[in-house]
Figure (cartoon, each protein chain N blue to C red):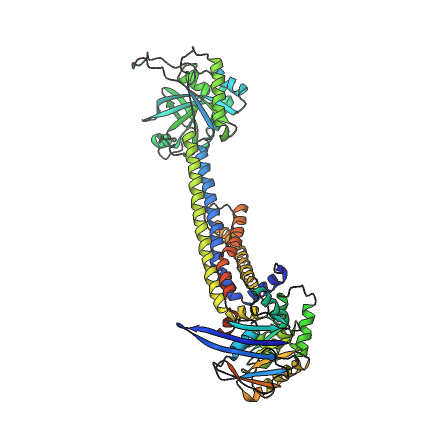
Length: 231
Length: 408
């Protein structure tokens, strides 16, 4: 189980500090596909960064599979990102000029133990997203939809518990967006927690649950878990 | 945990290869730097070699013994007496008894008028053996030197310095002609190669060399020598040789107790200093230019690597997102700049060898490519890559991953 409990985060802007998240609590369950919505500046990107340990909260607790990791050090958090979390970005963030296979294998570089069957794993992950035949192609040779599927294969290669997707369909046409959403849906159905930030209600509608933020607080939650954690 | 070298290096090499232009731009300064070092060292060593050969031609391994001038007593010059202490037998003794001497020769020196047809000039006439000519590194530009037989037979043959030839014969070839040394006719058998002046300014070309026996029996008519020239087995033994020669002579010519030694010994300290100074100056120049060139190359890597840290912010963010620790990012950038250093060094060596080869082919330059310089260039480039990678690596490691991922 993944739970945020009383999380606050503010950023300095000029001389004052601006609160981005205020006392936010949220429980995410395995096997559910959650969409986070909200206007610009509502804190949804910050929330996603905190969930992915790319940033740390000023106050509150972050329980990840039972461990409070809100004060963990860089090495621990890097290992958690590596093994437990898969990221999907609006900009795909593939390394240019390297093959899809090499891109998918990037997380293996930072795995604590040597993974001998890296190439086979990468090819399996590419097959899952329907790109088994494109493993040797570079991002420049792939369409936007294909690039995003390569990125999803990269997120899946170390079999993470949590997938974080930041506007994953923002740069895609409707057909490709649909394909990516189906993949995320399927990933959730395998028992992983999937969290997606989007500003598009039609995209959010594809999720099991829609959480709406405004000014750093949750203002609506379509289907909160039966037994919320904390307070 | 230490990062797995192999996997990191493999990906870094792929990245560098995938971004060929960026890679080549990064190392171009270093390539030029290392190539400059290679060529500078080659030119420098070539020039040093040639300079040293010229300096050595003056003789850097010789000890020269002369009879000491008569001591002055109470400020008044002693009776004008001829110095008669050195004999040909002393030369034999040194040849046989000295362990450090490679060769020894006696010499007589006179300043004499030499004449040809209507012209004359006063010049330094040296009587020496065939071996003595070798000790002095004398070689002919035309004709030949005299040999031991001609010396033993007291033949009247002379080898002229080019200065004397100019004064007496102008541009005519004197070999085979007859000139007079004092009043005695000599056949010119050779002309020496020009040697210029010695460090003291004496003209080494305004000389006439004749066989020692001829000089002693036919020209100066004395049984003693003016100088004894001893060659050391190596320039390093000069001081020891000097002591040894003095001991042998002291045994043969016992001085009264308390009296000063009847011999003056000089070695080629001045010339040696010149030689060492020349070599030092040359090496200093080469080292200075080398360090500068490598630094310029290093600055190129720093500049482009720093730029690439900004350009690659999203890549850094992504790597952090998929599990890279700060130390992994630091390691990656250090590895890449070290690889760049190695690549720049290797390309620089290739370029340097090509340029030096081309220069040696088209020009009159004396180029000496050296393995130590090549190794130093390669090693220096590698080390430089590592060192200059420290700054960009630290900067890359400090980047905030969330902010980097948003970078454009």
